[in-house]
Length: 242
Image 1: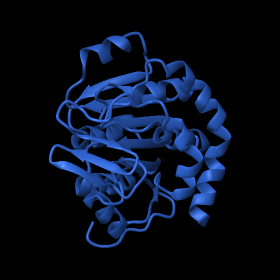
Image 2 (image 1 turned 120 degrees about the vertical axis):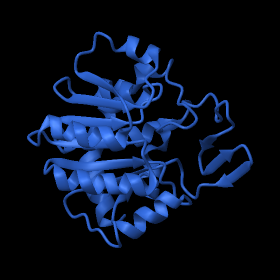
Image 3 (image 1 turned 90 degrees about the vertical axis):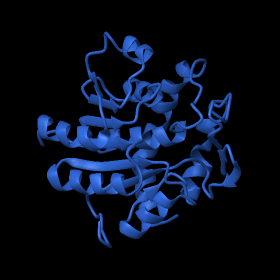
Image 4 (image 1 turned 135 degrees about the horizontal axis):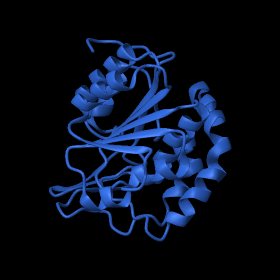
C-alpha cells in the first residue's frame, strides 16, 4: 500500500459502517444509472468530506440525482449542497422541493462553479464533485477553483478510468489519488454488488467492472470502474502547461 493510499484509507475507514447504514434503505430503489457514479466511488467522496470537515459541497452533473441522494443521506444537515446541471429533471426537483439545504442550478458547471464560489465567499471548507465538465476543461476549472478560493479542499473528477484520455491528461498534469487503486477496490467493491440491474443506457453506452460498453463495441477500461480522481489542494503539484 502506497503512503498516499494508506493516508486516505486512514481518513475514510471510520465512516464505512455509517455509509452502509445510509445506503441500505436505498437498496430497493437504488439502481445505478449505466453512466453514473458508482457507490464505492461515492463512499470515497462522502467519507473524505466527513474526515476533512467539509462544510459546503458543489456537484456538477446531477442527472437523476443518485449522487445527490447519497450526499443528502450521508452528510450532516449542516453541510450545504449546491447541485448543477444543464437540465434538471422534474422528478428530481419534486423529490427535493421540501429540502432546504440543497440548492439546484441550471447551467454549465464551467460557468456556474466559479460564480457560486464568488457568491458563497471563501469562509466555508468546500469540496467539488465534477461529473462534467471533464478532460482538460475539468482540470483547468480545478486549478482555477484552488487559486480563487483558499478553502476549496479537494476536487473529485469522474470518468478518469485508466484507459481514458482524461486520465492520461490528469496524470501528466498533476498528482492525484484514484478510486481504481487496487487496495481500495479490493476492500470496497462489495458496495457496488447488486446495484446494477442494467449495464447500458438507451443509447448503448455503459460500464461494468473493467469493461467499457459503446454502440460500436466493448473495450477495456483498465480500471475496476469509471473512477473518481481526487485532487487535494495541500500537496498538489502541477506540471505542464495547465
